[in-house]
Image (cartoon, rainbow, N blue to C red):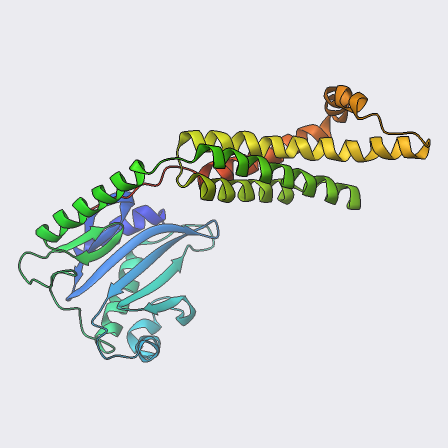
Length: 314
């Protein structure tokens, strides 16, 4: 038994496939473009088997039904629910066994069975460039993680287009003023929601802090116009501040209630002076709020990272 990556490598070598980035095996098997990808689904390891076929004039449902009913797949650990047909690509997700491992030989047998079944469902795709349809020098390639056929001139054009798109993105101005306003506004809103739920239920919920991070991230990115390190810094500070504001607003509510019970006007100046002591005395509650804020901030930082336009070819 082996890991998903090792099983893909073993099965790929038996088919004569190339091993590309991230351990992906790709190439041609009996005319069909085949891709074996080690991955994770719902935190469980799996291997995704993909076959490209000629979809012209063919019904995808009929293709799936034909493969599922084909005798070739019946003895190959096949389950129809794991098979998807989208456009010209059949995708089969093979989960790990009960101990979380895979067999290269079983993966080979499954792939061979899927190819055999596909032969009775749809023919192989034409040997031509996906973009210009030339038939000269179009070996299987892994382009941005997907097996296809692309000629060298088209690869050069795609790379140039990606570089131009990246340059255009980087040239956009960052609307820092709007970004700060959006981050501050959503941070205050998140703090109010945190305090409101806490007052209503008497409990703190991590999802509120995480949700605040998502809100701050998306709002700040929309206001800034693009993501970069500065915008990430703004969202991080705003999200962590949102969690602390929630604790402060929560304390402010009970501070106000105490004054009202005595029939006195609330001394907000005194409350401001007491904020550091309030956060310190809250102890574990403040730590929990900060932890939720940091988790939310990490998500916000991920949302506002610099967009990259890449053209990866193996």
